[in-house]
Image (cartoon, rainbow, N blue to C red):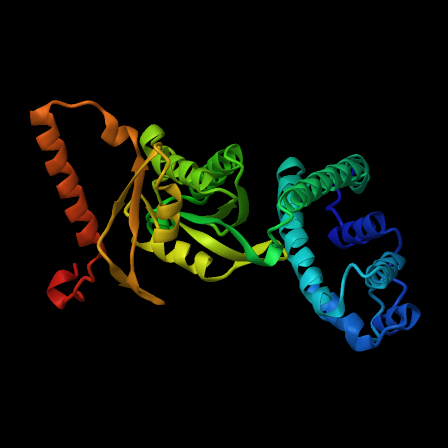
Length: 365
């Protein structure tokens, strides 16, 4: 193999041809003219995909870019995408694939030493890997499309815009402290362990992950019981495995607005607020979810002290635990101790929710 340094500019050019089929030959003005749309529309679509702005007369586009623009127009002609939805759809696809591409290139960097490999080897590797990745991505998309369609078809009386469901948040306790004290590789392992376990638990009980944001996961379920099982399993994870981060979990029940894979509405905000007041390893739910679980013998619910959080002046939180914690047969003396223990836990929960006075100078180390 030639020991000459790799020409990275040349490598990028070859990758461009390999991935897009041809070198750039078109400008934005030419793309817009051939598609039959104003240049402003073409420019907005390009930016919505997350790509850097380019001059209208700069030759940076290929026939593949033209084909993609024509396909977008075809979606509109079929009535599948309206003008109001187009920008949001393109923006969401751009963000999703940008994250995926960054991760995939990171894997490639770990697998290939670009300082030592030659261009022919990179080309051979891409020729083998890219078609496989495309097939896997297409399969995953089709599977999720089937799953989403099945949910809607099996719940014909519940529209997407007004579906009642549970929304839950789980976040890592002390993430800021971890991010400062752990090495980068250790922090990556912490987050990956959190995301992997969350994915396993949430899907096991028919839930769906809406998004992960570093130290936090947002999930939804169609039933209150599934949300309760998921929340408790996530909160208990650190007790079962010390390498799994301690979590606090909050969940709420009600009408949720779905849009482009995300969820919106007061129920989402409520779940986030409940998470903020939960103690490590605990689950806190709202009154609506507590009511939905009232007849389920698998769980134990206890009303906590009302509190004020951002957006909610008189929030009524409920502590969620497993019924096993309360249903163990006990004698009179043990029953007395158990009651005192429950009173103590209730007092601790209430203290946790009380507003704390501001720190004085003498309180700061």
